[in-house]
Amino acid sequence: MTFDMFEQDGVNAGQAECYEQDVHVLRGFALPYVQDLMQGINKQVKTTSPLRKMTTPGGYSMSVATTSCGQRGWITSDTGYQYADRDPITNLPWPEMPKAFMSLAQSAANKAGFLNFVPDSCLINVYQAGSKMSLHQDKDEADFSAPIVSVSLGISATFLLGGFERQDKSSHIALHHGDVMVWGRADRLRFHGILPVKAALHSITQDCRINLTFRKTQ
Ligand code: MD6
Ligand code: FE
Image (cartoon, rainbow, N blue to C red; front, top):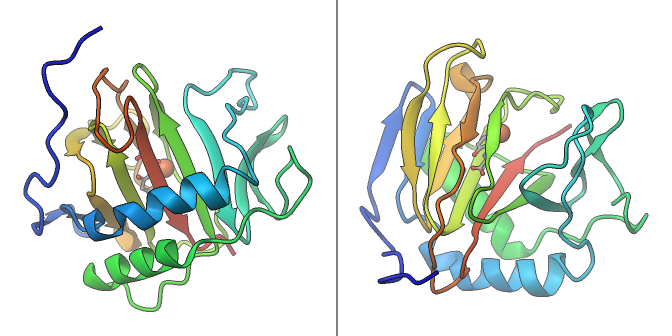
């Protein structure tokens, strides 16, 4: 397959958009951190806890490859989804959260009005053409008063922002390289997902979209 051009970065950088009461999209907010984020993923995280496609409790292989860093990592098991202190593949603690990850997450949370956010987990999702994330709620965390900070890198994707019931209508939000989404409070338990990612190339991530989600899990 050939591509006419690389995707453009920094579309609307600096803009803060508010969807619903407590869903904020900070356009391009992560751009100054990109080099540190990529280095953290490639040299600190993946080398200790490799990317893997986990199997859902229903027995399906996820189309997204995942790993984690920080005190706890998100995993699937026969019985459901949970956070674990150790990586089940290596049986070792998850790699430490690189400092740049923590500072990005905290400054994005502050900018969106969520003060004192201290995430203990960063989930890394890697999408290739066709990968998707079905509608879900993030409810494996013990404390819903903390926000979730979500960083998009690489090729663009369409985020589905739904309501509080699975069948509620979703709105579409385009997420580009460097965009950061911060949400919580009244909107913390909204259903959401990612449409199948379209094939594209990005100068930093090549044929992938990378998503980092920061959470306080306990
Ligand atoms: C993704 N994100 O953007 C998937 N969850 O690839 C999520 O599932 C997500 O972006 C909770 C809060 C923000 C998110
Ligand atoms: Fe989610």
